[in-house]
Length: 62
Image (cartoon, one colour):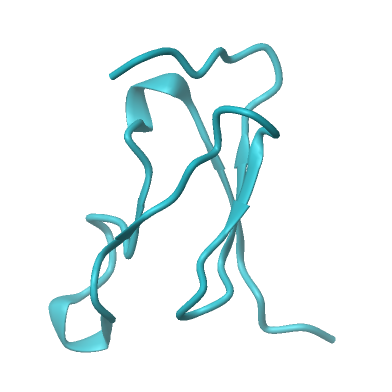
């Protein structure tokens, strides 16, 4: 069983960064912005959290 989280996001969550606002400050790593526009998927290089753009959502310019 994997401990990797997968989080579904919407266009209003963009620009996407990890950690998100829901993560407690003490449990966070440096903020990194993730490009999800081309593939609809991104993975955080620090914690491995997987992000997926919700089906039907469009990542535009922000």
